[in-house]
Image (cartoon, rainbow, N blue to C red):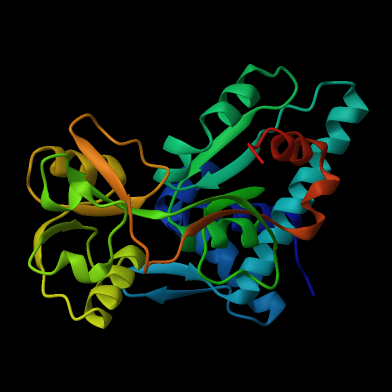
Length: 285
């Protein structure tokens, strides 16, 4: 196989963006030239490396493997050159996580890493599917998210577990309860994530199983906006127990919904890198 280092480097950048225009700009080459590099690499390997999913480009399983190898090769080369020249290793360790994890779990971790002089931290904000893809492809060293199914090919460890709670105004009829069930929400208007978010699917299944009729007050993306709408009196909302409860609201555990667990995931060999070890040690285990 005729596989060049230049082709691998170019593919690693493409795999990070999954957009030929942005990747070509970063590489300072034309978009057609990048197309040729990626096509020739796929032809040399005899495998398709990406596919089109609607308007998006996504890596195939082979593409994830090649991207992971390309980034690892690039990391090893950079490490060798830094040691050879006696310069400090400056490449950042990359963390991928969602809004909730960054807002409510990882603040101290980010402060600790940002205050360090030896290990720089780069952050990627994404959903759990994008996080897993980033870790698998080597785009991120470590990921944090709520996972319904633990990946077989990655190392996953629980970071923190929280109940699901109902946010209600203190004057609401349910505010006097110690806990609530999904059936108690019959007739209520709820602030919910958009379809087909996993939380929305879970709520709809739970309400359907409980035989509770309900209406959508508003669809909102992210816990801060959902919480804000509840404070405005738009409707009630079920959120993760790590979400701070604003003044004027109270949180009631929902007994027939499962707790949510945030997991830390990384490739098994990632802990060979001292930068990754430093990041893992900074997590609030």
